[in-house]
Every structure is written in C-alpha cells, then in structure tokens.
Length: 127
Image (cartoon, rainbow, N blue to C red):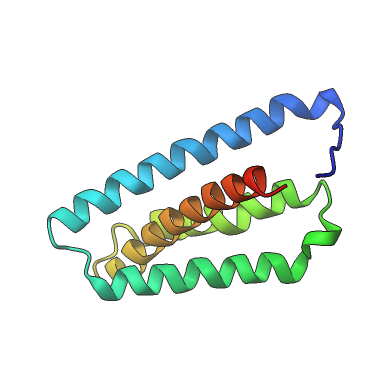
C-alpha cells in the first residue's frame, strides 16, 4: 500500500467533497428505498442503474488506470460517479417524460456508493 501525503491546504476541500458524497449517498439510498417500497422502481430501473454505474466506473478506470492514479482523480472520480448522475436526477426530476431517467440516476448513485464502500473494504483487507 502506497502512502501519499497531501499538502494540508487541500484538507478542507477534501473534507467538504467527501462530506457531500456521504450526504448524497444517504439521500439516494433513502429515495431508492422509498420508491422501491412504493413499487415505483422495478427491476428494469435497478438493472439499468447498475449498468450505468459500472459503465461510469469503467470509464473512470479507462481514464485513470489504477497504477497511475493521481491527485486529480480525487476530483474527477466523485464528479463522474456521484455528481454527474445527481445533476441528471435533479434536471429530470420534475419532467413527466423523464421520470425513468431520474429514477435510474438515483439507482446509479446508490450502486456507485456500494461499489466505493466495497472497494475501500477490500483495499483495507487485502493490502
């Protein structure tokens, strides 16, 4: 496991970004659970959200292979996996014809958060 020391002037920005990611993840989990309980999200939305989440993660790994991760990946990763689907969700939330896209983007955020947590756990256990 490689340890990198970041300059201290990036610390407040990183705390804000990771806090926003945590809040957005909790928001998406709660909304997906509510919509699933009300039977407004079906298996099609769940599978589509999982595929979109895996595609965005594959795009991130294509841009930044794991051997060449840089400091800029800390900003590009959350934008690509979390903030981009969140923006898409809020843009399509109140449009009747785009409700499917809104629900799929929420599921994609939830799947990305599960993937991020699992990747962190496996990195800690197997490094």
